[in-house]
Length: 121
Image 1 (spheres, helix red, strand yellow):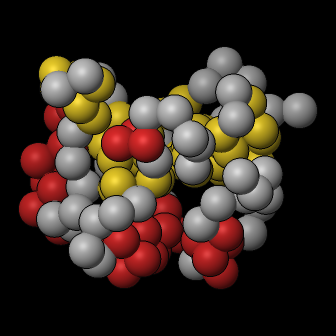
Image 2 (cartoon, one colour; image 1 turned 60 degrees about the horizontal axis):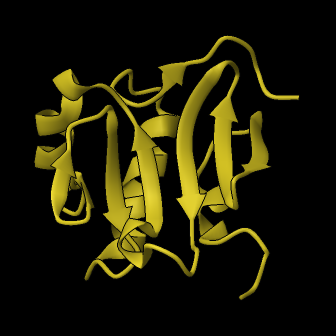
């Protein structure tokens, strides 16, 4: 499998000043001290492949209303009720949904992003 950054078209729609850090075979996207996205394309658990959107539970419904492709995580058929939403890479309108999320980030939509202890190295 290609080890380059998956879904790299998103960088055309994200603001300047982002940082990318590779961990656990995924690419973490930061803006300042906020984790914004994770880009994942791996052979194992392919149902988790796509773009993970950092948010909080209180914003899930409003984000899903704006971008219908955003969904919850399902691991072994069980829905996980964490702070992340997922655009699966096999979604019908994957690329447009990803662009919409990136545009929200570029407009500093407060529903997206979670503060981390420190910015990545």
